[in-house]
Length: 113
Length: 113
Image (cartoon, rainbow over all chains, first blue to last red; front, side, top):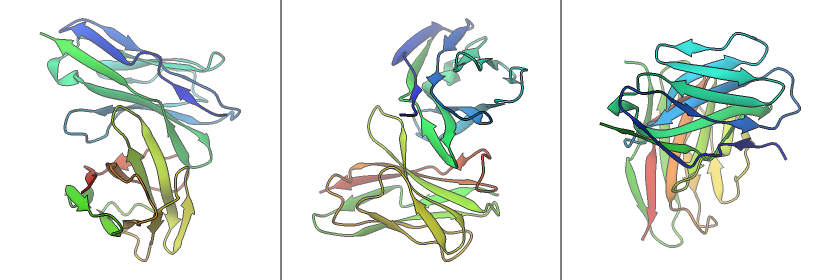
């Protein structure tokens, strides 16, 4: 079965510190895309960052960066200088088969003041 | 403003009743998707459509139906055959039906009375 696994159901971090959320996946595809989405209490799904599997360089968007290890099928999200507004559910997702996005179970992140 | 709208925000269904959730986008995207999210879980794909007048079943299509008569609209009907419809429903769209990033609407919360 093709799956996306987020092994940390909940995490917390102090404001201004750095936190890393993990994600592993299982795919037989060679070219694919990986995404991290944020779902705040409003429940709107917001794209945080995207990585293309054929690119070796890790994607970066301001305070958000990824550590993509293709051989290990790992795609972690690092949030630097955490802010209170980063409190949310975070979902990892990828196209494991065709056009369908497969989502992980999510990690609930709490940023503490 | 360009974006994806979903209505209503909250919807109540009686036993044996069919209800329809609306999803509209003015982004000129070709592909549209419907996802279901249960409490504390990730998203699961119900249906998707890559082009007008064509749609495909996702992982959990049973008890649901869709239509795609217009590019900007992709309504989802929750039929009486869906025995456990209480969930949060998210609509998304992407520019094409390949591995483009998906953008999400604000969601509809469906409750069974």
